[in-house]
Image (cartoon, rainbow, N blue to C red):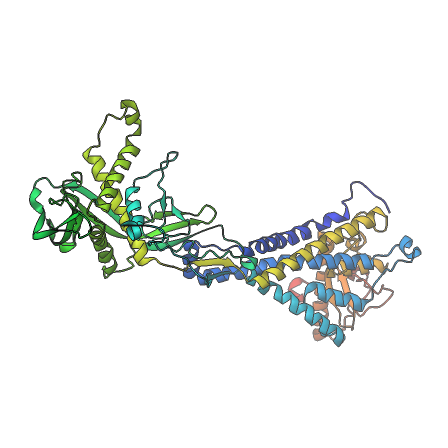
Length: 620
């Protein structure tokens, strides 16, 4: 044996099988690591629902490819093991190593490597091959179960804690309305660094909005159960939800100042028994451009009812309008009218469970209406007016103070630099007042929509494969990869110990072409130059051009080159013509047994049988 440096090392034959084993192993490991992940993307959910047939076809093709790669890797290992077992050398035989295989053993291994049934074998062996064949057929379905995307919903039973703002934690007028009052007062708040909004959600989960809530995303974080084990731990997820994009535009109606009214009741004043505080009762009403508002009762410690702030509402004539009916204590709010538009919209929602943030973005062009009857919109719209009627005390209007605070907040946020330059000697303009009111109403309506319409929504999730299939395919992929690497190491060790040639066994005994050519060379009687010069490579084109024929004599194969095969065909045709025309019998080369080796073909040139010239036309 020689170790010619130009001769490729035997382990290089494993490059393709190794690559074929690494691809499924990488995919199997990836699927194994993602068993704890779920995707809550609404786009993926919609895509899976709308493309089930195409996805199934793609899954079947991908599964067949992965199964084919693994079968190629496994069959390559079996081929190398068989060739190594059949390899014989004087040194190995002298050392007592086992070499050679029976033809039945080769037949069995050939069926195993090709993945086909062979019923000519003994029945116990046939049953074993049947099990192997069924296993091979199950590889592709196993991969299909591993990579098929599936849909599901997260249903986790548990107790949901919702805050209850009562006397135990809050006092006075703020028992229930304090949270909404604070929402209005901070509606225009922006962060100092990136000028983004930050709105807390009105519960005790600690989740907050980095954008406007638009009344959606209220179900995030309600169940604090941490998913562990096979389901993993959710860190963030996204989904889509339909709602309403509320847009408010406000202006002060100075052309018709008498559109709103506040009046005292006759004999509407009285003094509390245990104090000197007096209550003055009255009525507030308004005539809005799209209809009249019948009004509500108001009260104050002042006879002029100057602490009154109620919001009139009218949804007549296809328009939604608010009007501020305010006393003299709130001059900034007097005479302000607002138009409200509720646009049905679908929103992208991104929830980050790590920092408990919720980001909501409207999807441009969407118009999904979750309530075509408009009952939800009408209820939310009127709730603002009802809220203003209940958030008034003898001494102040809670809602009015919240709007004034937000006007100041908007003014400070947008004029911070100018305030520093002028030492605070600038006043809020009408633009600041209107924008402060608009922001407050929009955020308030968002919260009301969230309370009324989005108590809980189970998000759909997508996931690839079933856990059982994933574990099985990943384990099998790793075993195949280890088998290929192990066989590479075994061959490399055998070369290092000079037990096998550097290039490995000289041929692939399970390859039908190599087996026939190797046998032809081994019998020592082959006269064909392509057989004599064959190097053992299965891709030898010269040897591959030889013709194989199964002779009439049982159990006989013949190797001939193309020219000899054509000549034999011509002579056989001539023999048939001569037999029918003149009664002369032609002895074919097959029938001529005079001194010809058993394995090979005697060309017509060596055949001494009498020949009669003929043309091609006559032969045909």
